[in-house]
Length: 390
Length: 236
Image 1 (spheres, each protein chain N blue to C red):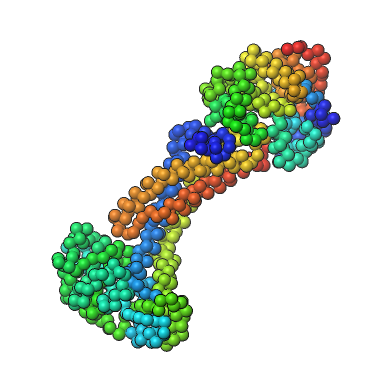
Image 2: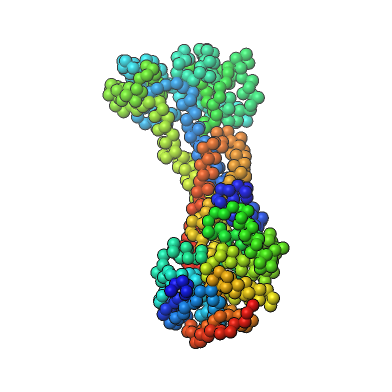
């Protein structure tokens, strides 16, 4: 390390010598930086899990354009859409297929806990609208009362999820109807429900007697390969007579859902604040570490200034210290941060995880915050006469 | 002119504090210091010796009057010029001001690296040589915390001299030294004056040094009250 820094800066590695001079202080400084990292990791992890959870159900389906009710801010909210608009949309030459998607909540009463399952109903023969890994299992959905269960549902023991297979299905009662789970797919708990359930549109209408086959929650459309999806969507907006409908590309719908969750729903706003507060507290901690170090060495820096060292020399020392603290504090920070996120994920089944993007941005952010803090702390040197600082 | 007299101050005044508390510490000091000479500033404490020394040595902004250092006016000089000039000076401070995290040799190397990149071997050799000259050849890799006050003072001397400065400013450089090391340091400074034309300005209370000085300037209450040439300085 010493030699590397010597080569890197072309001078004595003063930052390193200075930081490691007192082991206990060095340990405290590293602990401070590591703690700041952990703080931001946890907050970012929570916020990212919300994004992952929100976008998850969009991965179950394959569509290019989504037609939703005007008040459908997210996939599960809002009224329904009349099936007749599907027929009108199919008049566009670039729209090749369409199907209705029904959404509802099923409560699975289990001995210990009631699971809230977000339930999707759609025509199982329209496999091109279903993600391949789920579509491979939709044959059984032709049976009335058949369902596919999210095997990562919150509160569902792993071995029990594993035992649900076509040979050994699992049945339970919902509002007087028998629902039989023949297989499972990979979902994962979100912030709304405990898990997901996939059924046919016929089964869905059996479960939710009040719903009509003429009015699904969303209409999924697929366009001709190579068609400009956004152009088709805007043509459909002109074509379809009901102007209150939201007609967007499927990708845009997912992004709008996410930004709605993050900026309009209380949970999303709280998580956003958590990240901001985490970053602010992290910056304060890092600033404290660096500025303390600079003021501890003010007398020595003043001596160096008197000897003819320019301000860039001091900025170099600060940068060196920022890199050392950033790198060595990051290692325990990411280990503890990942462990905490794993523990929280186990407890909540939310998709809390360390991502490369999080790791990179926290590392770069730490080094920048360290450098700026040190640079601000050394500003005292600029104007002062060296003789006043001894 | 600046070749013969690297330091020249005219009408130098200096104040500390602001507003009501503003107090003048230096009054109308005129002084020219000849190249290669050893000049000593004496006077009771509070007489402004150290203030004059730091004003001449680019460590304090000149408020009023003129200071010419090696041909450059310090009054109103910008930071870049001050930094350049400081590199040609050697400073031995009253408080030795060594960096606690650096070894004796690394501290001395700091006096070299200010002039730019040097190979590690060359700068270590030069620093070791300088430390041997001040009698610390066996303490090269000691941290200041493990050196005595006198040894630290000598490291500071080595650090000031290693860069071959044109002018050396010293504030009580022998205060922490025993008789023999003190005499050695002064002898070293005098020899540099003879051999390289290095000019030394020193604040001291040490009577042993007064005998060695070329010139003794006495200050009282911020004014020069006597300025005598030591016509027959003792040879080393």
